[in-house]
Amino acid sequence: MLNLKKGDFFSLKKNTGQNLTDFCLGVSWSKVKLPLPFYLSLFNRKSLTEIDLELTCIMLDKNGNRLDWIHSPKYNSWLIQNNFPLGKLSSKDEAFKHQESDNSSLNNSDKKLIKINLEKINTEIDQIF
Image (cartoon, rainbow, N blue to C red; front, side, top):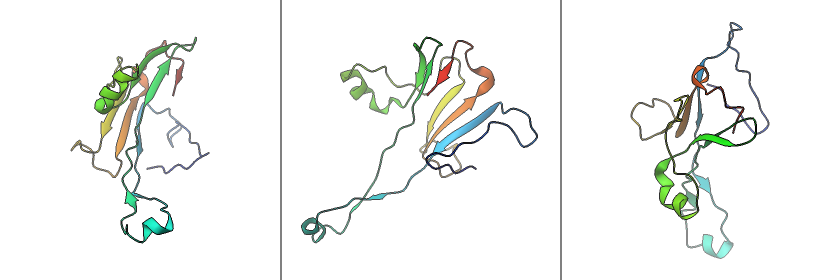
């Protein structure tokens, strides 16, 4: 497991010098303490709140055109109202797969996870965000 912070980077080379073929990007987080004005903090002892962070992956061609994407379909009603593409859990080429922690196959502390298989990525994809 690799724990990255803002500005950190890592190499996609194995310790053996070989290239990686597949890996996972996962994020986890804890509750956040919200700053409350003094008068509210007197009456509200519970100032921790849950955060719902979302992982999204967008794939572009060399001209910057969107070829594919993945993100949770959990927000499809909002996406429809705001003219965004609907969420989906797998890319067309199946190189990118989105999972959430309620999936019983996850055996770690990551709350959101994107599995990436570099060998399956569509050859037209030039950039991945």
